[in-house]
Length: 361
Image (cartoon, rainbow, N blue to C red):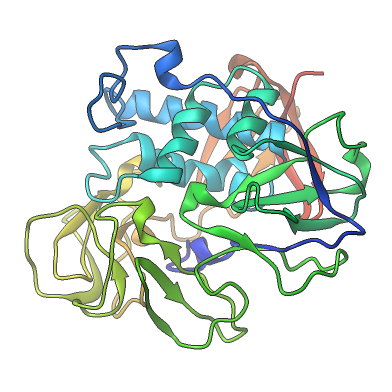
């Protein structure tokens, strides 16, 4: 995200009060990838993986998952199609992203999203502990109870229904290694964010809390991640700064810098003293690696992948039929109907109105 800003812009959390709470009313499980294809990678007892056959397949998998997520669950935070595509490509393209593949809850989310065929399926991915509804509107919040602690709910007034009727739109913070938290229990509080281990009470600049990385901003919000959800699945102090470890066996001098290969194709980092790479072509296009000097704690090579001066948000095309997704500054035209969705129209959320494919009515 413009260096770290691309990532930080969409983190959020909140615990809602009894006045405006999220109620669990139905539990349903979306079919898994293995349910649909027993021969798929990870379905034979081996370590599960989401790796696509090639870059084109990975892009298609990511686009379908993100278009459905945005349409069915509102384009809030990382649900917006262009923002979601970054996480999804990192999940599905193992060649472009060999060192930080999703694990645990992040892996489960992307596996679930690859199998969806209805909005109810999408809701089950976003709310794995049981589908929830909103009893009132006008707020973004976290679940009041222990169910779905990673889900950030968008209870925007125009779409709120009584519990038991329709799922509440929501963002599963686990898709990018975080959880949901809020500053207080005031239902009108719009500060619900996806956050790192210390939520809204972060006091140190950066560090490891068990195997979670904490990265504080000046407002005390933790923009870190649960390292067990990606890569080497641990947080380490051993490198240039506290960081989540990659899956890598190649040593390099530890540095917060991210460098680019000739032609600005690949980004290379070694914050933990282990070499890790990302092919920016898969995310923002060929030649879009931008070197980072002295990156902030938690900086990873994919942060260097963006089109400098490119697009800044998702839009509908001039005729309103296609979605133009903005992926780190790269514009991608999306045929919504080809993905089994309605044409592009803005969707109202508590964070604002965002262009998106729309769900079938």
